[in-house]
Image (cartoon, rainbow, N blue to C red; front, side):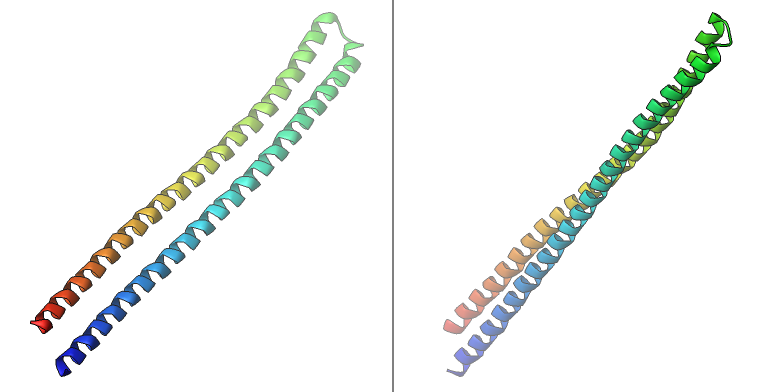
Length: 162
């Protein structure tokens, strides 16, 4: 009877260790999942903010281009009253070129911002993939440890029963 009690105590200890391992695994997975959710939420927030800024920049660029066109037209008309036909075409062309340069500069800045957002999203994707690999690895390790403990418990049970 004493050996059976000892075996039961050892089995209880082993089962407690298995339960602790599983609990630790679940806690680790919950933490990893929460971290991944926070990272994705932050990336989404940054992306939303970047999109909002891009839209604001786009609206402002259009407004500036319109204002530049109106100003160029007004300046051109005022000036054109005093000069010949050839100078009119030059003034309009200069105003058009100035507006195009402004819009081109804004487009370049928008391109840089878009590239930075893509890089951030790629980093978030890499982090997510690493978390998935860790999750799968922990699951297999936990299964392996559980199987080993069950095997040891079975061997001990057979040894005691024999």
